[in-house]
Amino acid sequence: MSANNIQHKGFRFLFRALWYRNYRLFFFGHGTSLIGTWMTNIAISWLVYRLTRSPFLLGFVAFAGQIPSLILAPLAGVLIDRWNRRRVVLTAQFLAMTQSLTLAILAVTGVIQVWHIIVLRIFQGLVNAVDIPARQSFIVDMVEDKNDLGNAIALNSSMFNGARMIGPSVAGIIIALVGEWLCFLLDGLSYVAIIIALFSMRIKPRAANETTKPITQGLKEGFDYAFGFVPIRALILMVAMLSVFGFPYLVLMPIFAKDILGGGPNTMGFLMGAVGMGAVSGAIFMASRKSVVGLGRVMALSVMVFGVGIILFSLSRNLYLSLALLLFAGFGMMVQMASANTLLQTIIDDDKRGRVMSFYSMAFMGMAPFGSLLAGTLASKLGAPITNIIGGTVCLIGAAIFARNLPRLREMVRPIFIRLGIIPEVATGIQSTKRLPGK
Image: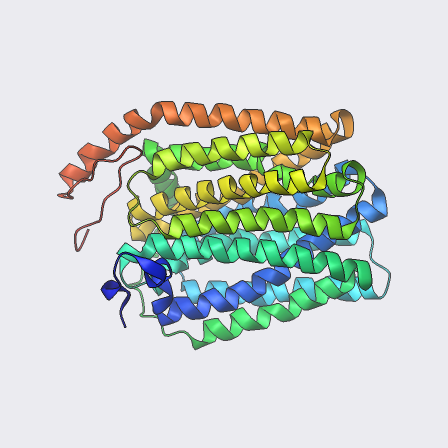
């Protein structure tokens, strides 16, 4: 049954992208792998803090794993637009598996030190610099009807955040009962699922892009395209702002779990699970939407919900209240990211998709290390709660500025749609429309 024939209501409509075989394989294979990834993320944070008791090193390890995306993502985007996207993603999975299994060996033998973790996180960061924009671009190849692209992106976010809910909870139990090494081992083995899924897909070959141009010229064209169009630039800058000032609250979570709420690895697992549960709720909300129309306003409101959520969480000293507040933070975080991703994927040209999504990846992952380093530095001087309050306040200011500029962004988009012969849809947020065949 085609996703096109599913009525715009009910359970089947909510999960309509899963009717595509290739996307279904990707969804379940990558979902399994992501559970292992989140187990490793939690285990690394807990291991670093257990070994050093240093908020700064918590931030620095995150910095080391994310900084390669800032440096390499734009170059990776040029290559992704020229290479076979499935092969790029497949190669990245093999390399990521190697990193996780190496962590497991070092941890189980008891020789692991912080410098080992930093080196391996840099290696993983190099892999992610290519893998993340490649995976984002690859989604388009798996969904035949582009009207279902927004649903596929929302389900992708639900998969990511469902893993965020399951992985940390399982990791907390495993760390308490066995140790961090088992999280690393299970993560390495979990990559088998996505590797099998990628080999099993039947993808229609894409027309090859022109490869005679120098890479530097391709990079310049991508930069001019992404940052020369104000709505795309606004979306990317919004993501970058959250990566620097908002998302580092996750890096400081061991401090809240251990020192502020007086718990252990299980407590941290519950806190991260609450974030994941809120994010899954946000993903379901996004998947239920019929159109991208109005997502600009939705994105501004979701950032406000996120900012208020982490500010109040930072003031809480009760576990149950903290869990409730993290539900709101997770919801706002997921809706913002999925909204920005959906809008970008809708309005960009396919031959520049890899480059634009590389800039999106750079804003999401590449700017995050500065946020992690800043958060770790501020937390060591001012404390984790005040650090989060500052970050949440900046997010609220950024959301207000974005909301104020929505009418101007809408006016800038409308003439371009009219000139292309696209029927515009009037939205309360950034306009977006369905492209005509051949556009």
